Image (cartoon, rainbow, N blue to C red; front, side, top):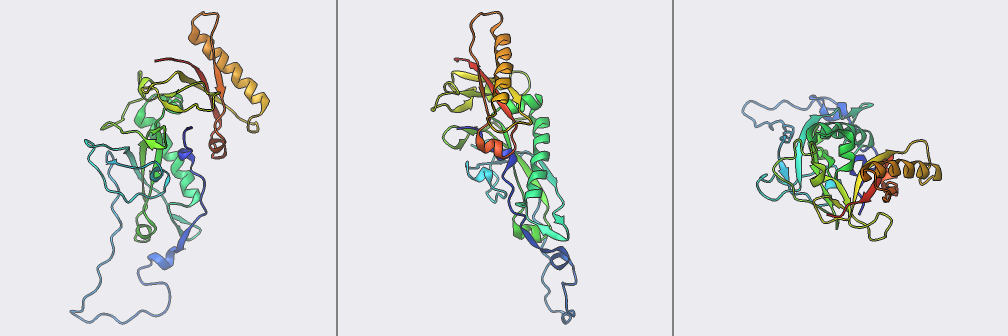
Length: 278
């Protein structure tokens, strides 16, 4: 299993909830105002926006649920099994061209992808390369359409760790700073066999493995699987493997392109792999 393209979820059609003026204006959209309630008559209480999630909250998400744009599941105790931790909560502007957009709108999804990724690097530590090499990824959620109509415009960024078999790994109470120091020994990306084999699967480096991803290679200005980019990737990975070999005359390496799904979602870097029996 390759890492699912959650950090760059496919853009969805921009779903609108109607003209903002019609939805949010206190006096209504059009027409004359209705009769005023008589003294003593009951009047409906205004609907309050759904409260924003709390940073540090934990969630028990399934693999498929992590790719959705909303999550209505309960918060769980971080001392109990959980697969997601909310590391950042922010707000976004849901109004574009006078329309109130749902969280699933492509333009909002792209905005949240950037913001959640930036904050994930800060939360985990270690920098961009460490995050690329890790199994830890950002997913994000926002209010439901009904909550958006009542004025909610928060979003929450969660960190998850995809595992083999289309599941998510259980997480500790917190992952803050987990990619600093030797954090990749626990959360790095390793392989069950050579990346060239059909039964190859990516796993966390704390799991049993035989290969390890040691660096990434940027790919720009090339079509998918272009020979020139493959040759450049192999050269870079050979040099990285030579450095790791510390003077040994024989060493093995492999350059791996991103999956087609990741390429389509915007990933423009591949991996350098070396044998690493644990």
